[in-house]
Length: 202
Length: 202
Image 1 (tube, chains in turn brown, blue):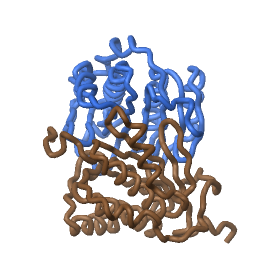
Image 2: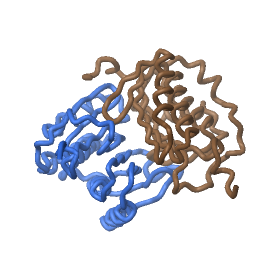
Image 3: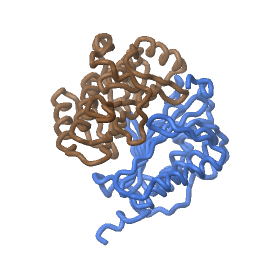
Image 4: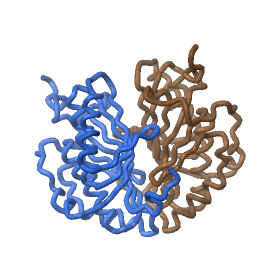
């Protein structure tokens, strides 16, 4: 095979995301959380709109989950929103550290943070694949972990433990990719400490 | 034809979006902007994570642009992020006011707000269609309006006048749909008044 990076789970995954602390000291919240996250296993680039990370699926989810939790533990209303992507036909092979393994550098510090969250996500399988059964199966597993799952226009809503939510997102994403879909895109918006949580006009 | 709503530009378009004012008074910024936007031509539902609007393409873009501009004119760092969608196979026919016409209720008040912005967007044509030429053509038109266009991982970046940016987004979305793509999804994140604008670590 000419390009081993294009094969299976060693393909380059990535996430472009932003963290929004609804607070006057938003810069401090972002920078403090960023210092607490070990990003040494992903390629990372930040501009004034978002941050892009690239690497193994496991590392991409480890970093985004940890970043969200470290910001949320401030107690401020924080939202993280972004897009996970793998297999984009226009993607380049550079800007990545795929020599790394699946050991998650932030698992321990993130596990210590208990956080309820509300998440809205949508998965877009670009190209053929037997993905519907995979998605149904993964959503059932998310429910089995005590997360409340609701269908809404253009998205699926998850309410519950932030760790279970991120695990569910990662399993949906990686198992749809393993099912044979060449290009998988998943958008997500996850919110913590909202003053209008469970009081919204739903 | 059994379902005239499934035909051409009268199909139901929608947008699920959130507005993030990076300020302690974020609730006030959101509610004040919301009061200044006329949403009577779209179906609208807000929960604690996002707002969903549905209706004609013209009305969806009129409302999202106006909401962003009215929030941005406060001078606070505000970001709007969301997903425009049309033709989702799982979509229902309800929750929409498609009897409305294309006259834009917020065009005049929005036009009075001058605002520079930075936007990152990605367009996902789900299904076949001759869309690449359409996208290239629309991006060229955006450039012709003085907006700076940059390719970044997983997105295209637009820097310039917020009105030109929203016009470009709408034209990309609607012309790709007209080109014959049954299901079009477009994600966007647009930022105003960022303290790190043009000083970011890019």
